[in-house]
Image (cartoon, rainbow, N blue to C red):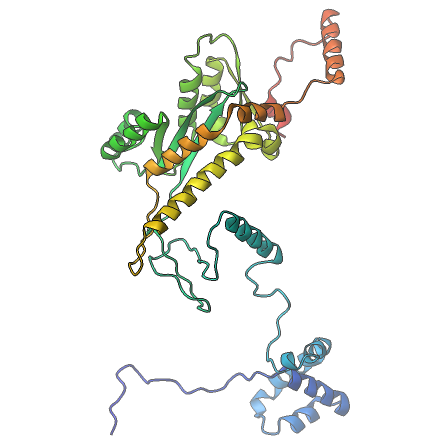
Length: 389
């Protein structure tokens, strides 16, 4: 005699409470109803053993098939589709749209243009990827070798003037702040946001690359860094009485009240580039960023090639993430690679010459002021209030 199951009553018996029908069967039932004209007669003929308790539900189901007759006829036009029990509209349960698939094709072709080995074992990237080997084609789950680390971010703040003079970039790395408020404030003031041990390493990066390095929880620019940015590059210029025009994007950290007040104090006129027009009005976006990012991308590809070149056959391949020093060197090299002609060309690209209409308007304004017909009590126009609505 078999012993009783220790895990409960065991597997439950399948009751077959729900029954699915093919599209061909549904269309045959609809045709039978069209011939007999009575739903009860159709059920008695096609389902003679149907229980009385399910008669009403089957009657409603047949009426639904009758309403969907045209759709069933379209499905049954294909012999393969006619044997399916459920039909879905085109595009239902599709992960990517056709436009997104085109973008992926363009992206893959661009990577192949950089001589990257894009094959059928393309990786599936999630929030965190375990360190596993590549999977062959046909597997539902695709793993990829990686460094075993989550994504790290670095923010770069670039500055150059219309003469083509480039200034050292400012970098912001991700650094976890201390849980002790006093220590966290000390790190922010004395060590640019890094801890005591990490600051020794970051100091060497600063000294070697001549770039200012900061750290915070998100590796993102903020108004405190914007204040340091203004202080570093504009507060100690030889003649502070000469105003300086600084073009900035719409990022909120650039336009806090403390930043505005400090910029006014050091005679820096900050001009906001409209959010939708940075590609044509901001010199950096119009001319610098493409070659700058291309240089960083090329150095990253070289780093991957070096790791693959050092890999020995039959040994497990462990990809190494770039260190902070590597990223800083890439940024410094990419910035040095940008020529003076490229920098100054960005300003020429975004510069719009003053036309005859503007000259005429200036003449009218000056004449109105000379005749005391111009209201001078309005004060200076605030560009934020006038042009950002």
